[in-house]
Amino acid sequence: MKDCRQFYIDGKWISPTRAHDLTVINPANEAPIATVSLGSSADVDKAVAAAKRAFESYSETTREERLALLRRIIDVYQSRKNEMAEAISEEMGAPISLSRAAQAPVGLSHFSEVARILGYYEFERLQGSTLMRKEPIGVCGLITPWNWPMNQIACKVAPGLAAGCTMVLKPSEIAPLSASLFTQILHDSGLPRGVFNMLHGEGPIVGSAIASHPDVTMVSFTGSTRGGIAVALSAAPSVKRVTQELGGKSANIILDDADLHQAVREGVQACIRNTGQSCNAPSRMLVPRSNIVEAAAAAKSAAEAAKIGDPFLEDTGIGPLASKAQYEKVQRLILQGIQEGAKLITGGLGRPEGISKGYFVKPTVFSDVNNEMAIAREEIFGPVLCIIPYEDEDDAVRIANDTPFGLSGYVTSRDIERARRVSKRIRSGNIHINGLELKAIFGFEPGLQ
Ligand code: NAD
Image 1 (cartoon, helix red, strand yellow):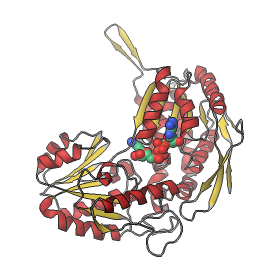
Image 2: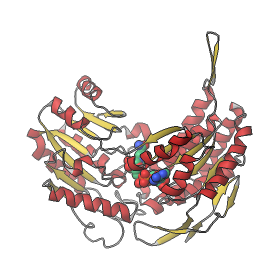
Image 3: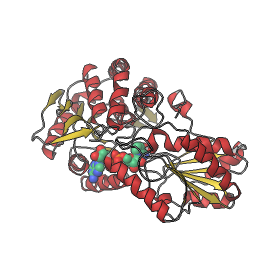
Image 4: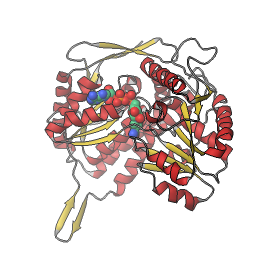
């Protein structure tokens, strides 16, 4: 059992104000693997006070000093990358191949990219007689989820450090091992005390105390829409800046001129990768009505080809879901899909055959889904794909936009101009044309076996 009960405040590992232990469970075998402390608002007060003190001097550091710090962090992170991959696989069940190739290195790539940008970033610009100066905003509260733990943490911490901000991080209590290791990496990189502080805890207690704290100038939140709303409400009375990266139910429009088999196969893989626990997963596949039977058959073989099992086996493509709560939510929604009359093509309720322990679910494909069904409206956050038929291009765009979410979207076509035209009509934060550019993001294509 790992002991992760201490918080990192003012450059030191310290015990929480009041003991409140939580046992962390390995989702692959349901065995206890670590203990963390759940903090309180008194712990948040200490962390914020340390960050506020550190801001005075850290905000005055030069670009060169901050660049040197980022480079030291990159070196130490690089030397512990394998340990990081193992911690992530252990705490949230990502296959070790995915953790080594993407989950761990993506944290490093945020630091490298931020260091590259810091090298030339224009902090001051004279516009007429006005000097425009970009200044560090102050103490930042960072609240992150468990599904891509290092991605979420690094993409907040690296730019914060580059800008001259100080910060208090509350990682997900479901994925504390990677966050503790990350904190040790920062400590070993010689970070000035108080610049970065980390404490574990529950969202409604520690997360809310960070969001509402009068000395926190900005909150950056990534997580569920429910959590994002709660954070914005907590932050409002102290009038601080809030950024939110929330959930998704992204549509993947396969146009009638696409290579159907390839588009469906890639769409299924992108949907179930990381056991479907990606905010931008293309979980609604929109296909022309005349192709629905062919698309369902192709999706079935792609889903059934995924190798499910022990995340630490090299050839595992899909691990368990991260927690019991997530397992129960996915089961509830699969049942709801069946009850609402969607056609179950493969997968379904219960664990995959031969697996009796752990939060494993069957990669599941529903076809003939109506966009009004709960499985098409709610973010399932599991390996569950909904295939929805459309009549024509306008109908596809209408269905894609008929969602409370707006995170991501996908369009596949042999005609790039047509794909661009359709994608312009989709109301989402980003659009992927002809597949998720994993190579561009990770420098490789994470497979599913
Ligand atoms: P979550 O909202 O339950 O938790 C996220 C974080 O917020 C955790 O640290 C949690 O403790 C904290 N939190 C929860 N309630 C809070 C509250 N009332 N006040 C303050 N903090 C609170 O989400 P999760 O289950 O950890 O993660 C999955 C969700 O995250 C999915 O909806 C997924 O789409 C989303 N996500 C979004 C992105 C993105 O970039 N848009 C990336 C990854 C995950």
